[in-house]
Length: 240
Image (cartoon, rainbow, N blue to C red; front, side, top):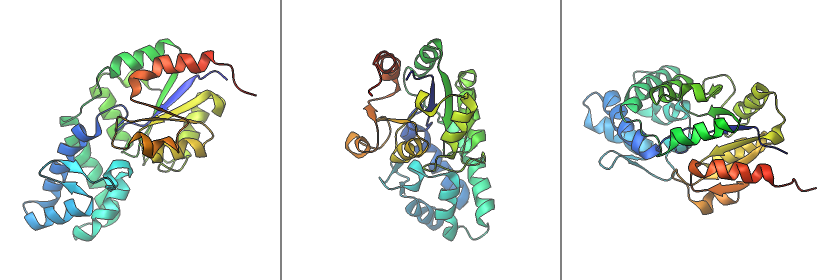
């Protein structure tokens, strides 16, 4: 069946996760700690973040978790807020600081326009806040490329649950078999599979090919391979 729509993860798929969220997370923690060095260390340790190298542990909640997940993990070290308040504050701070370090992958604009020229409907499903996702693509001048953008706070649930993918399929008015999801994490693959759409993994994030292969239908190096990959899928007869 012909592929007619693509749902993208954002961080690690469209934009460089480490280059964008490493510096942003350091500044977010500095803001929350407000000059308290011990608190900054506790917050960094809680989310698996090294402030000196601006790098994340492999199991860091920031990599695939939502802002709400990050807030839950930080909450024991933030005595002045409840979880909803901390979630709101983290969304606000990440919105500010991630824009300052926003780093799209090379060739992103050309790739998206190439896919649009093929008539594909494009969307984003991210565990980031919806407002931040809009801010990112708008700053890159790519807002018009996407007819659907959903975040953890859009009312569809978080990945790996299938709510955002189901909402995108409904938005496109296509069959699930005509839609693929592209992401850099196991969460993305599980979200796609639960919604009945193909999971295409990319190794441009922090997960390796071996970590992704058993969860994905296909594994690519990055989204730059997508136009020719889509051409191949759409030219290959479906198996009975």
